[in-house]
Length: 179
Picture 1 (cartoon, rainbow, N blue to C red):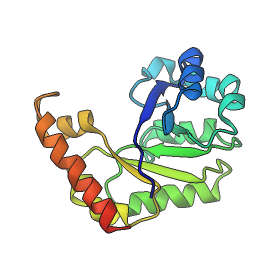
Picture 2: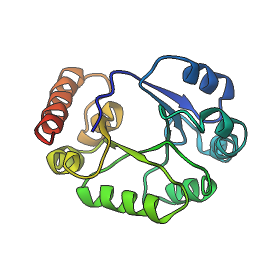
Picture 3: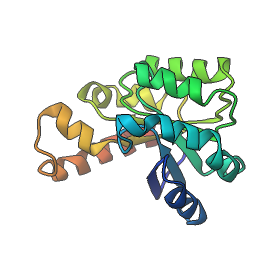
């Protein structure tokens, strides 16, 4: 598992921002198909990843694509749209169990996405409860999805900030314990 000191999240349909982010120094550049992309723009974002952007990030191991939740319809469309591309890494949101990780890893292995790294986002109370088991599974990094976690526990966005530090500490401690 790696320690990400910095990452940049860019909507996958924005070629200018994507290229700029890839020219920067972030440990991970995440080209997003999920929450920064309105549903109406998701088809365009998928096309951008297949065409213009794939040549830019194909050889950059710092690049990842965040797909929609693995078991969702949008997640399935993402995987079909990206089929046949070499993805240096995939970021999977809303991971709740080691089984979610195993399913994503098996699907990546059995498909022609070819991603070598798998980063997961903890965004629900169930995921947080299972974080120790999740970090012990086959993941390259774990990130807290603060905004969605706040929504999931019923907190007003931004008011749970001190609690998010505790969540980050819990995830970091679990990752260190897992080696």
